[in-house]
View (cartoon, rainbow, N blue to C red):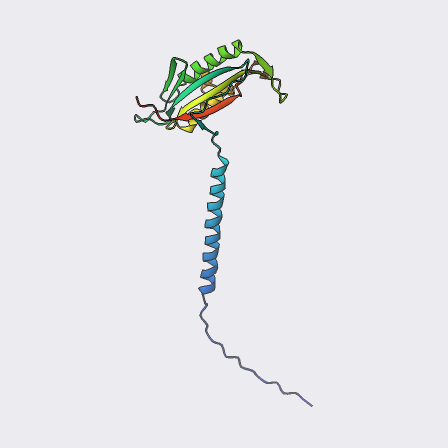
Amino acid sequence: MARRKHKHTVEEEEDDVDLNPLIDVIVLIMAFFIMGGKLTQDIRTEQITVPPTKTAAKIDVENGWDLLVINVYGSTQTGAGTPEAKIKIGTKEYKNSGIDDYTAYIAMRRVLDQTYLRAQTYADPKGTGLMLPKVKVEIRADADTQYRVVQEVQQVLCDSIDPSNKMLPVQKAMKDMKPFVNIDFTTRLPVKE
């Protein structure tokens, strides 16, 4: 028996493409990236740590140790548009004025070097080979002092940057470094001048 071939005709319809699911997916993807970007930005700001501050707290100094108080004032931009930092150690005040002026930091390093030479030292318990002074340093900063200024003071204290060489990293042998690592940080209300 012979089979007959049937010719089937398929009706072709012109259908419009439904864009609603595509738009929904794009909105969800955008929401995902916006939320993901916000989370990573929040995580990034939490990683920046400011030293813990004590307000109006008396610093305890162990027997045989000295206390060095460094008062810090300043900002990266003043009303004149130039950076300014003031550092007061004891009765002497040192000042940076303008870009690439590190006069206060240089003077502070000289005072630190003299203090280091007068102080008793002990070997770094972490085995770095450094000799550390028995000096507790208290950095007192106005509430208006920008953190960058305090950070630069800390770097000079740790002898990691050289203020007499445009604040570049120190190029000394480890045995020649004079770092101060016992540092406390306190804040106070801004001093009105």
